[in-house]
Length: 320
Ligand code: UT7
Image (cartoon, rainbow, N blue to C red; front, top):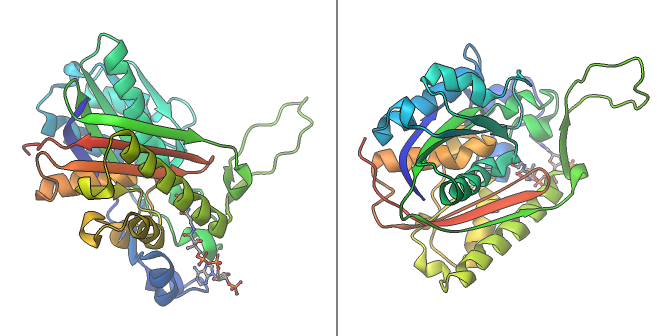
């Protein structure tokens, strides 16, 4: 499987750390030194559906394919205002596609999870082209009175078209139950019969524990993929990691003993956009020419669950 098109879309509204310090007990200094984040984009007058559509259209256009060429649409999304229909179903018709679609919730690892599923579909079914969209609005999971969570996230969407061909070499996915370290409970309707009180709650996160689990699990995934493929960190040109915290990326980089240039970031501008983050980074780097033909790339992401997903691939240049 290889990637033949990429796209991304971000909300217009730029929110700086100083803007947050205007109503929260926080500071630009704290947020920058603890996370690396300077600004984030937040949905204001747009909807997530619109962002998802924009990213998908850009990916489709760069792939050179027509909507009718897409055999499946996989949409990675943790939550949006529609529980049903799926975000994929909503985007599908507006794109002019009429293929099957489903939403996948692999938390922040959802894009790499989707790539793994797409790879399996392309190998086992009579399909040629799959569109993957990762669209997230984590800003709407947080309490905006909770300085420990709301400063971390940004909204955004990314998309890619994958097809049969040489590119992805290997995947490693993991899952484990650590509900208590990070969860968000949204509202369900009551019935006359339910007897289990489940209060809704904005995002609850044990930041330190997530940090620890993230570093440990990502290192494990990356080391496993390298070892399985007879490689070392030196054989990888770029590590495109989930953009959750600059210090997490730095811990992984230090473990691998590789130079900073191999770990590009855009968390400074966009914050943590959940499963959209790696796709936004890829799209920006592919369009700017920083991602070059033939480069060996490692993707690695982690998220609530606790789930992780990593992939090893050779990049093929895309003409935009
Ligand atoms: O996609 C996965 C999403 N989640 C993550 O990736 C989270 C991973 N974890 C992290 O990135 C870090 O743990 C955080 C950035 C969330 C927090 O950094 P930390 O160095 O682990 O800080 P902490 O949670 O231990 O808190 C240290 C202090 C606390 O004050 P006290 O108890 O020492 O007085 C917090 O109340 O920092 C305080 N604090 C803040 N201060 C100013 C927490 N948030 C803020 C804030 N501004 N925004």
